[in-house]
Amino acid sequence: MAETGGRAAQLRSSGLRHGWTTGACATAATAAAYTALLTGEFPDPVTITLPKGQQPAFALAADDLTYRQEGSGVRTQAMAAVVKDAGDDPDVTHGALIRSTVRPAPPGSGVVFRAGPGVGTVTKAGLPLPVGEPAINPVPRQMMRDAVAEIAARYGGSGDVEVEISVDGGEEIARSTWNPRLGILGGLSILGTTGIVVPYSCSAWIDSIRRGVDVARAAGRTHVAGCTGSTSEKVAVAVHGLPEDALLDMGDFAGAVLKYLKRHPVPRLTVAGGFAKLSKLAAGHLDLHSSRSQVDKGYLAGLARQGGADEALTAAVAAANTGLEAIQLCSAAGVPLGDLVARAARTTALDVLTGSPVAVDVICIDRAGTIVGRAAPAGPGHR
Image (cartoon, rainbow, N blue to C red; front, side):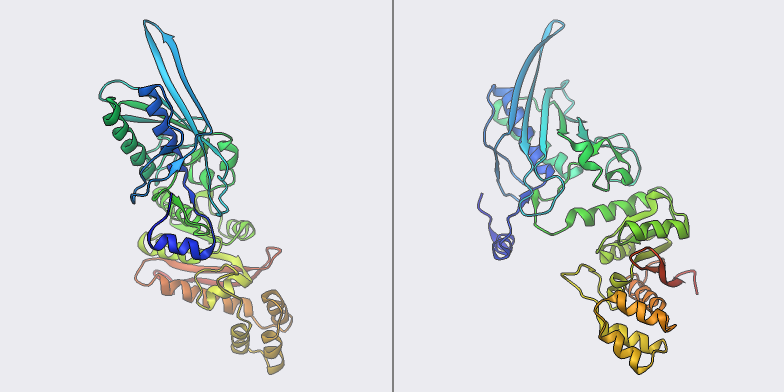
């Protein structure tokens, strides 16, 4: 399919190949399976319509049409499978085989969704699906309903079907995602709002941050921690005793945490991370990835001077190779650079959260997990 418009130009100029969401793949597999259920033939490739009107075609990796006797009648089901292609995005589901098995359902039932092997089930409140439902998100569900309705109209079907989505190896793949923490157990989620994966957009990670906040709020948590990695997460748990569903794996996306909490507040936020990353937040950066923001040693030198560093130490910090070297130089001289960075990072966070009832404290650590700087809670309810 040829891309059109601004998105296509952006993808061409980047040289990166876009891919398809699990929701688009599940829709393609469902369309092929339902067509076979009504006609006896699988379309291959199968074409679907995405929410914004694009019409990609998907090759089938497997198909099967089964007839079996059940009591006095014949039970028919069709299965089609599509390989998930994430393009040039580093998506953990790239290459996964997504299957849809479609069976007739009682008249008037519409489209009923089931979680097959490798697809999770919702067990916690706060997600966009009720507890007990298959982890097939609302937009992919609507895409599949639309595909079923179109095929039913074309071939004279009722549109009353059971759609079971499964992912080969999905339970194992899900261990590398947020799903266990979000209370989605047994496998992956079927995701996507546009059907298209834009390389390195990190939309899935940011969406997981938002769902993590939603789950924490639904569980009644009044204190959450946005952590840059597993080491800072362990420190936040040790310091504050937070439960797992209060931990937000924000990675480099401090801005995503802060902006979502501004709209969906929790009374207290702890920001915990490595000194170098949090020095970027202190300097006003909300994206902490090394390709999009750098440790500013000149900025650190200015903070060190404010903390009592003499000219020689200030110059040494400005010339340091890394943030780690800067904090080591200041620690040896008794200059509290870690605390100064933590306070400045807290100021950046509170600036983003202006007008929202969220208090913030900050914990800076070194690579070994030792706390090298802290800022006490400040914001609503704290002095």
